[in-house]
Image 1 (cartoon, protein in one colour):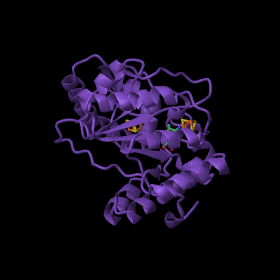
Image 2: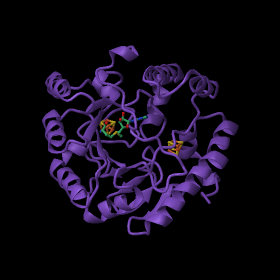
Image 3: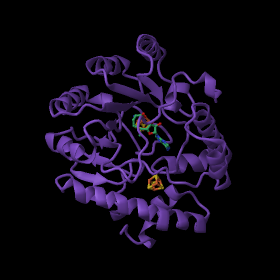
Image 4: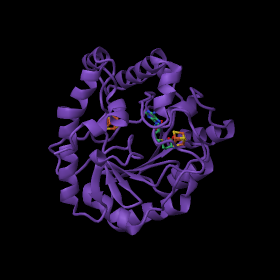
Length: 300
Ligand SMILES: C[S@@+](CC[C@H](N)C(=O)[O-])C[C@H]1O[C@@H](n2cnc3c(N)ncnc32)[C@H](O)[C@@H]1O
Ligand code: SF4
Ligand code: SF4
């Protein structure tokens, strides 16, 4: 694994850290489905070439604009967003027409580098988060050299617009079998790599890292939720392929204040139900979300 200083791109950090006192969300994810041009062994959404894909619609954008302020961040998540560049570009332009002035963040495996560069060139307040594993060839086939060269050339001219994802691997989706196969020591090493990078860039201090280590990294990352293009809000981008009712935050046509209130109840449920159950079982909370939700009450 590369030392923190040897990462190919800087680590991604959120521009605004979410605080529950905020009126709306700092950021959210738009999810178009599990269809992907790769099939990583650890993939949390079980991405694959024959996965599903629904395009972003006006209804998706209306739902997203209800949940984030006009200067917030809208993250495009998959699957692989670059497999449908025209729909993505349409969504970005349409959000600008509707007054959104914040950042767009595109999660991508980087393979279709020309498409990424076109998206970055089309909008100055857009950045890309590349998949750490593919970028560094760690537990995945590495990014093709010509794709990396194209992205490096853009980065040289526009520093800060291309970043790397965190290095941690969580046990959800195909990640469950992956973690079982590679063993806990390897997963701990990857978490340590992630933590070292976060300390290097000042996102975490020694105390927070020691706290996470003491709990054996059995923590839910509490990500911001997902607007699904199939018409539902989902509470967790890692568990977005799960239909369990615990994650369901309603239809994308529901009033935004109801959806925001449901997300608050979901965060309470993580604190009061999910993480205590993970501690009781001495397993990662993502594994509770995978195997044991039917035994747990619904949020609020
Ligand atoms: C699901 S992918 C979708 C976007 C794109 N295909 C990619 O790989 O970046 C979004 C992010 O999830 C991360 N990811 C995938 N599987 C993961 C896992 N088991 N644990 C933690 N993060 C994971 C990837 O590193 C990536 O940054
Ligand atoms: S991690 Fe990204 S690139 Fe890999 S299979 Fe999942 S969605 Fe595709
Ligand atoms: S613990 Fe559950 S809610 Fe938290 S990231 Fe994992 S799957 Fe999502």
